[in-house]
Image 1 (cartoon, rainbow, N blue to C red):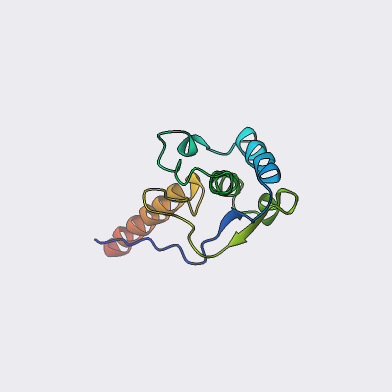
Image 2 (cartoon, rainbow, N blue to C red; image 1 turned 60 degrees about the vertical axis):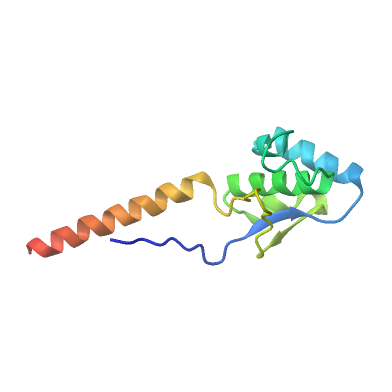
Length: 122
């Protein structure tokens, strides 16, 4: 059986253009509030480009995905916005769903497999 998972309607959160001071404040907040900012640290896959805006975008997207893509989780006092184009760059993959999403898909697949085997015995 071949299973292809396609995320239709995926959304990401990225930082708008703005002053480095405002974006650094957003970056600091997101990292302190549960975003996974480790990939933006030196030697991490998302360290380059080494700009406040790039690191800010990765951080706010991590926060946004953690909070199930709730529109309010991508506001940050107007410094961020929701986009439908994947902002990932070579070597730096921006998550499109929170970690729990994969488990949900696997559970649905398992249910479908079980249903298929039950219907064969009827």
